[in-house]
Image (tube, one colour):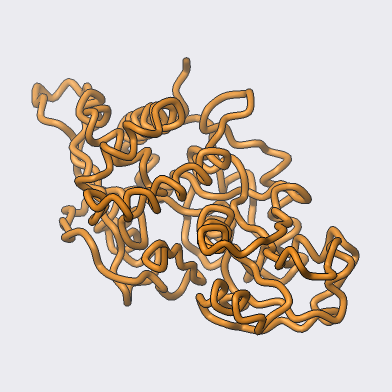
Length: 349
């Protein structure tokens, strides 16, 4: 499963592996704004409203809800013409959004707060990953049986940035430990070989990536998911505030159609895998399809809606995460967390 890699990056630089989909430029009416009118507008023009949605990284089954919404016509039914755009290797995460080449983006709640702290007025409008998908991975043979046992141990991380590092900080805090209590080793995106080769005592990875790869390799592991110790906001839909102000009905339509895709994927994973073949290269290969299905199966629990309303943003969790990130030095400056998210664009029913 070496081709199944979900890189992460700080806000200012890209770590995506390749450019995947062609860039479709969107004409601008101003900063962060597109010129389309809202779906259902009384202009007499019934043409579908174009939206470019940035998914970041390479095409992968982790984006199945978006592919499903596209293939089943959920976006079309909502009056939209959606381009799903994956980012290029040298592209910063929010570069296209700031340049007006994207209208909305699939990004993390932590990244949204970091963007706002750097002056990028991004607003998170719908949660897709309901659980933070990062975990500490330890060989099953390790004497580390609790997070407190990490003291004095070497923990591998891609680098001191992104969700894996934030997740490590959360795990350490829950155990009453500091970064100085462990040896943090930046190993790039080599968590799997580093653990297989016993080059580190533990490594931070994703429940739907590195943990899956190690299990497929027959390497027994124990995991300490971040979601078990601290509620952090993972990935969802976000948009620049200017775009929200000018096109609220378009945003609502994108959110509703995407959540339909999410609900379908949760209910019909076999069909979702098949529907993703046009977007994810290689799924006609039985081996690659099996690998993708393993990733999909591991992703379903972090998409699962455990009661409440699909896409809902919890105010207490947002405040708690903002306070945590600021205290851990992960925000350039304090942000008004109430402006970082909104539930106003969720479906009414």
